Image 1 (cartoon, rainbow, N blue to C red):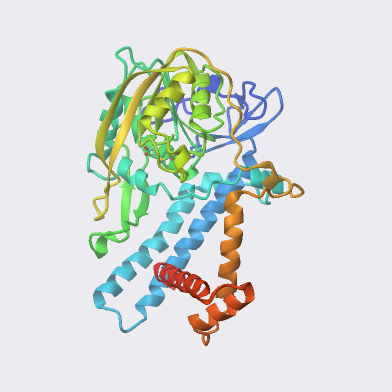
Image 2: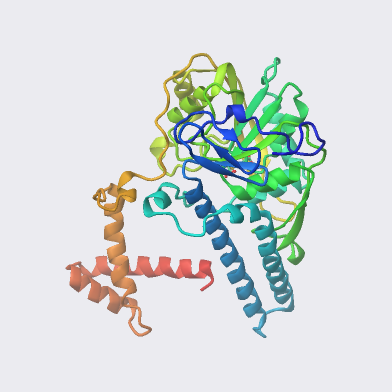
Length: 466
Ligand SMILES: C[S@@+](CC[C@H](N)C(=O)[O-])C[C@H]1O[C@@H](n2cnc3c(N)ncnc32)[C@H](O)[C@@H]1O
């Protein structure tokens, strides 16, 4: 943040004028050093390295992500110990020992790499746990672990497979002839190669703000695009051979970064940006994975865009939602977005290779939807996104009888009964008999439940390797 504008390969001053206070929505100001503050409500937020951490509850959210780092370090340690212990077994093949030793070394090396990369976050995080309500309010969705999208970092900055270029081509084909204006916001920018490619190649863009909530991705992208290298291990799920089971990748930018590329750590579902402050919004692989009604997401993008601004989306249209009722199709989304003030001007469907690591036998083939929608009218403000319902934040509120909870009550009751009978002596037939008697179930039903339960439990134990 203190580096002068225009210095090659360095970060230029953040466009402060677009930021707004996540608490009172007033303009916020940088102290020119390591913090932002709201002159209206006094809210203070840190800067990690060069990346502002603009959150409603900055300390609690730092604490969540520092815990996520702790969980990742524990996992690496446990994996390393498991691999080393397994090599002591004289019955394993020599090639297996070679692979496990390679993995153990990679796990051991990964921990300090992550600690170094995330040191700005660890330093800024509070020593003590936040209060219960703040901890619940900043709780991360279970899917959002620290390294869940690590592969995108390698695809963007290390693999030489052309995958990142193919994505950029899809998006570029949707850019209007007059360009994207001077301020581009990328929501859920991840490792940010796409954001960087657009920034590098479209001179009319004066500021690109790559927003993500994941500090591993944002801090890595900020470091890489400022001309430094990030070294991390990739652990492919189906490595080609033992050398590829844990492989050190060096992530680097292919060129110096043009001035005006910025990173922002914030919640993309409540973006802390002033209304009408950007000329274009890009959502790459974002609308499909966030727990937000697409109406409300479109509404918040509408409010961020200047009149006549464009929203470009690219990625699969549905991924995360497990509920058939909300797995919306493009034809439904077109209608929804039109009702939220957007006119789709151009769209394409392209089949692309997705996350096919050169070190792995796996890779996905996806049909992605890229569209350009223009803001044709301003719509109402969306209600803010809340991570968790009030009864999870207020311990005195009753837990609602959701249909899913009731189903789980029955299932877990049954599982607790059956698993409680495992003592190394009782057979499935005996367990079923005891359990059926207790609940007045016909023998055949009790036996069916017990066989189903133990079959599933066994499969899960095999998958977990225990
Ligand atoms: C499927 S990845 C796509 C990443 C990147 N756009 C790409 O195409 O490689 C989804 C991204 O959204 C980010 N994300 C998820 N929920 C978010 C939220 N509430 N606020 C900001 N970023 C979020 C994740 O950290 C991740 O980087």
